[in-house]
Length: 164
View (cartoon, rainbow, N blue to C red):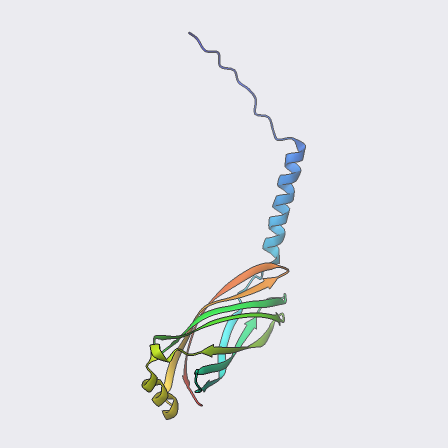
């Protein structure tokens, strides 16, 4: 038995499909052009104060810089805080803060410390004695620009003298 092989020409997509492909391509190019070109950077953490009450609380101000020509909205801060290499707290703040273009801005941080992980007496002695502590912030900050989410990783380390 011989089989007959026919060469069927490939039919290009109809005009309707081409328009859909073109619109999708333009949409994705638009989204790519909307996103910030440079990462927002965490410059420093300042005004660090530890309140020792029933639940120890660390208050600080994060100073960030937006190098982009576009303003954005800060939506979420999700970071772990390490004190002298030990996990001390978790920052999980939901915000709706306007971030100006090409400018520094400050975001208040409020963190409940986990003294069980750090060691209660070591921490109290360090705070009372004014000892310097290595603080590391690791996680991410989430922004939106015209409803397009942008997540920026953070890994910041500083040595501070904690005061009450």
